[in-house]
Structure formats: C-alpha cells, structure tokens
Image (cartoon, rainbow, N blue to C red):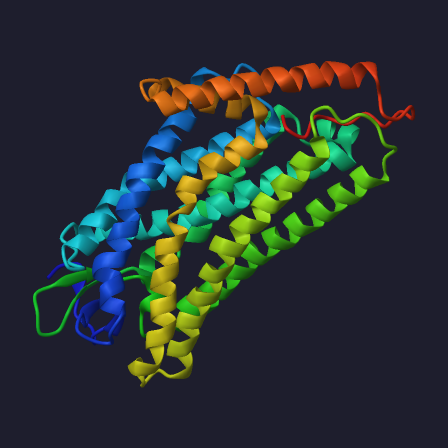
Length: 365
C-alpha cells in the first residue's frame, strides 16, 4: 500500500453509519459549506487582489496587512476544490499522501495567517492613535513588509507538525482510504500538546493584544479635547473594534474550544469512542462555519480602508451595471457622498469646539 497505513478504525472517518449526525456533516454539510465559500469567496478575494494590485495608488501599513490577508484567503480557496471532491466522493481520498498533507497544512496555515494579520491591523491602528509620531519610526512601510514576511514564515513553521500527524489510512473492511485530520485521531500524545500550544500562542495572545489595543485606542480618543470630526474617526474605530471582536467571537473562539474538546475527550476516554461523538460533531460543524471567514474578510477590508472600499464597491457596481437595482443604488451612493462632502465643508468652516487636538494619523487609511 506504500504510504497508506492500516490502523484501528477512526470513528469520525471510517464509520459512515454511526454515530448519527456526524456522517451527515462529513458527507453533506461540509461540502455544501465549502462549495458556497468557493463560489462566493473566490470571486470576492480575486476582485480584492485586483483592486489592491492595480487600483490603489497609495498604500498604507493597513493596506499591506489587508493585501496579505486577502492573499492568504485566496491561497486556501485555490486548494479548497480538493476537499470538496474528497467529501463529495464519500470521504474517499484518491490523491496520495503528499496532497493530503499539503491540504491539511494549508487549512491550518491559512487559519492562523488570518488571525495574525487581523491582529497586525489592530496593533497598527493602536500605534497610529496612541503613538502617532513613534509609530512612523517603529513601523515604516519597509518594516511592515518585513513583518508580513515574518508572519508567513512563522505560521508555516507552526504548521509543519501537522504534516507528520496527517496520514492516509485504509478503513478496515473496505478499500476506502481517508486523509486523516490530526484533531480526530485516537492517539493524542502529539495532537493534544500541539493544539494547546497553538491555541495559546496563535489565539489567546492575539486576542489579548487586540483587546488591549482597542481599549487603549478608545480611551486615548476620549481623552483628547473635542474637535470637529468630519470623517467620523471615532465611529470608524468603534466599528473596527466591533468587527474584530465579532470575527473572534463567531469564528476563532468556538473553533479552538471545539478542537481542544475533541482531542481532550480522546485523551480522557481512550477506550470509549462513543463519548467522542458530541465533541467531534461540534468540531466538524465549526470547520464548516470557519470556512465562511474567507467571504467575510473582503467585507472586513471594506470596513478598514476607505480608499479600498470606494474602489471595491465601484468595481462591483460596474460588474452589475446591467441590473436596474444596482444602478439605482449607485446613484443613491453618489448623492450620499456629495452630501457628506458638503457637510465636511460646513464642519470645517464652523468648528464645534475651539480647542485644538493633538495631531493623529487617519485611522481609516
């Protein structure tokens, strides 16, 4: 059998009859979610890459981070058809061990790339608000690019242990081969400490960093003397913080809880596969939900960058300009922008507060 290993049956992969619920997720829910993500996320991310590469004249630090976030999403989406085929084919892996390891590593690598780049954006906004002058020396554009390279390399190194824990197994009693996922393997000597370390370094530390940067940024803005805010900077900062916390609450936190629970149940009850079922089902569902993050990240980019948002929505309007509803919406958006410009002119002529405020960089760059 070459690279194929014959081992005791892994209930989450081999047994498609019991327990109830999990086979439904493996055979129908996961491929359905992956197909939706592929059909929606790939066009959105390719369009985002086009906007970043060809239409943005001025790149800020946040632009660099958002571009790398989009690049990470696109790289995973290009590998997603292999997983779709795997699950639609009855969880039957026919593509060999190398591709099996590559796909599992890509999923793990992409997930933490997304977390790290969202964290970098939060730290960048914190530096621009709380330390506007020092941030120019601490994080220049060249240093930002080097930091992005370091993030790619660090996540790749962190994902390397996934490869030796990924196997091709032959299910007993059948000729079906499966591409295992380290989380759902019965032996937990390596998977449990690895999952816990990744959860601490790649999730809890970024989460604490984001919370600290967000609270400090809001407190700094409230401390400053009031002045006209024609661009609604404080409102946009609150929206940014809300978007980041929503991403962690909906996607990252449940994923890590369910993943560690699935491994922990195997470590506590190694001889009782029936006790693994609930945790396995929760983790399989979280894998489905987490795939949606690739569709959400382009919208997250629109929330962060005004320049990107205008170009992105402009391209969307051009793509669907034959639709009357879109034409009406674009006309309304133009009128809204004109009204906002008039209000900005009025606010700059009649300031609401005479006290000057410290100079800070535009948080929406």
